[in-house]
Image 1 (tube, rainbow, N blue to C red):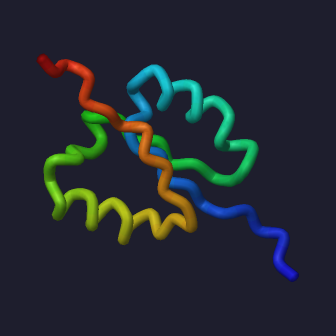
Image 2: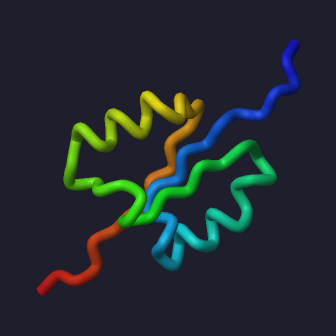
Length: 69
């Protein structure tokens, strides 16, 4: 049985929830936290590239669009 911790890819790390998650998720495993500058979630190719590069076991999406009418 392996004791290796899972790699976690956190999206939306610049928001309120994302910042809080970025503070606690590393206790669960290596965490790659990306904000809007680090990954444009409007670009499917960029998302695929990030997931292929990080190879996470978990993706946590804390991104949100809050400036809506």
